[in-house]
Image (cartoon, rainbow, N blue to C red; front, side, top):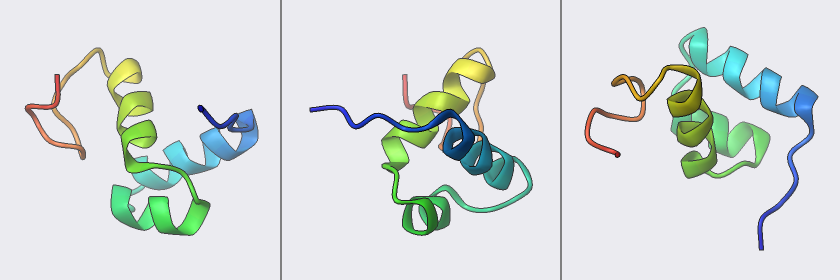
Length: 57
């Protein structure tokens, strides 16, 4: 079952990753799945390659 992630936490995670934190570190620090973080990034970047790798579609 999906876990609800608060909007503030989501913004903190995305800000940290955009500022250079590795997705795996954000996963450990904030307690969210790396797949969730990559999904958020993919939606925001229109599926362009990023910190989660180029071939995740």
